[in-house]
Length: 240
Image 1 (cartoon, rainbow, N blue to C red):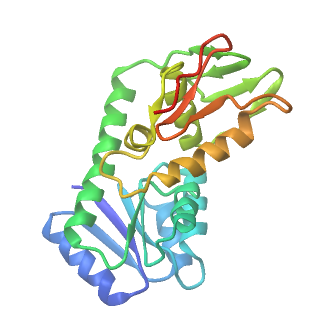
Image 2 (cartoon, rainbow, N blue to C red; image 1 turned 90 degrees about the vertical axis):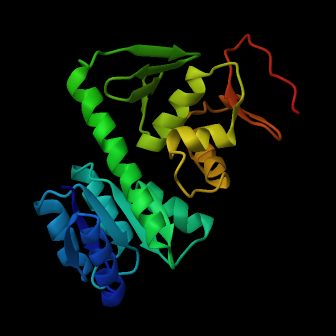
């Protein structure tokens, strides 16, 4: 039975979500205060966290950031703020998914099942596969895949998990165009409710970190299609 922490200051909503989760046989703990919710998240074991953005004493972004520093517990952020910037900010602070209020409980349950399923798959892979250090080279980038460290020459480049996954997805498909929809499904999951312009934001973040000064960007935009990385001698495909 999965144990879910609900950090939500709207008590009626928190109670409604709790009852629905209990009906689905989840074990639940509810906290209405941000700081106390953080203490629970850090000091007890939960399989997932449903986290409101606006909370008394400590907001959801700060809670997500602090949890992610020490734990990999999946976090679904629940908020009425649905702009692209708000979504990106929540994801960039460590949330795994984002659902906008008001939401249908069926959608929340589906998202919860999705993040729990991803965690179970990762655990199986981790337990059945010995981690081997593999070094991937792309132009003047060197990537240590076991510890997700990226180097350009002597410089170590600090990437978030999604930035790293974006880079590796493009490199795995080097010299080929990857559409925004493919990147969205690969990195955020097919059941995420994230718009494709979030991909554009993360491409910009990644470019700012990996591109070398006074050189063309590693990541090429193929207008109307998507993105690609190409080896120095590979041709750029024509846009559709």
